[in-house]
Length: 182
Image (cartoon, rainbow, N blue to C red; front, side, top):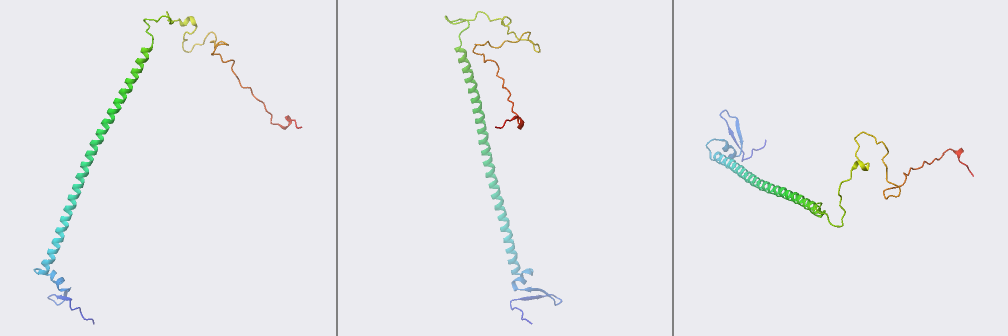
């Protein structure tokens, strides 16, 4: 048999059986109202309090981080809103400038036209508008055919392009009998 360790103690119950085996402090921690049990309970209580404090510090850190993040997002949102307002205002100003430039150009074009109430000397003026019926250019009702063909440009005028050019077909035979070999 092996000798038991001199540092190992056994606690026997009222019937004589071994209830606990271990070091003296381990056995004493299990017994009520002993200094070892009080020390063990104090140690466990300190560990639990430290864990609660660590959890509270972690919660405070998370809350602080969340507050910082929320504040940053609020500021960023305000900056984005301000940027969008400036962008919309800039687009409206650009559109107004484009319209004003267009109106200025139209007015400049109209100012360059001669005054119809005061004809200049030496310039051609139209006394009356030509009658479209007399020129044969009167519009025809939709779906009607002209009585005579509409004349094209006269030969010799700058608009006359000559007779229409029609490409001529080319005939090629692929039969050997049609070919003459020399």
